[in-house]
Image (cartoon, rainbow, N blue to C red; front, top):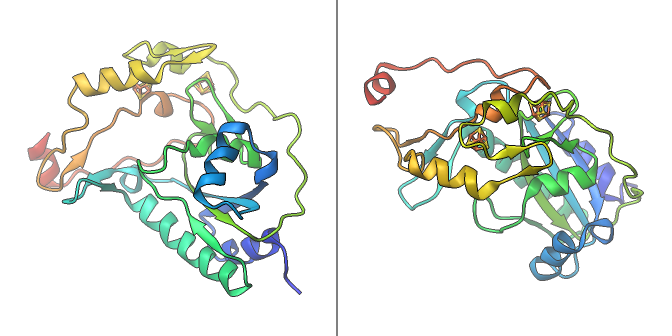
Length: 232
Ligand code: SF4
Ligand code: SF4
């Protein structure tokens, strides 16, 4: 009989070759993340981290929506897989909630992904998957389903400390020992990156620190439509 979170989650993810899933017990999380789940879903025992492998630039292109939100194809897909995951866990009798995304929860998914063993956070502040590199889109669920997974021990290093992201960042927001998120955001704000562009309301966010990273394979470039070229 299937009765733990891993077995259910792995069965759900199996048909989705572009995705993988990692599990971590809430009691094994750091104080900040554990505190979030205490408020979000007090009876939750386990966090399910879903990762979608991004293989084209188009699927990670974000668009502003009319209601002030934003979406991209990678997130639409990950959200749909989360729905299937939620239904499966609930069908086994485990209350399960999807953590709202984007920009609603305040929770940084990369810390959960690292705690769950999906990879390790690199100098560029991305969660680096050992094979996919920074090209992983994360989503998170909380569930009352128990886990038998033991705490992840010492994290294997994925970043090779090559320094490419440090040198390439136009805002000088990346240092070997620290990522200055405020500096990154200020630079992008000043460049108008948060203002949608063109009829499709594209959000053209800086991705230099992911694109220059040698871990994983850079997604295939977008084919610009005539409409997009006009909007540049
Ligand atoms: S997103 Fe751009 S500005 Fe921000 S840290 Fe990366 S390279 Fe620097
Ligand atoms: S570019 Fe180099 S230093 Fe930066 S995250 Fe990737 S591997 Fe690490």
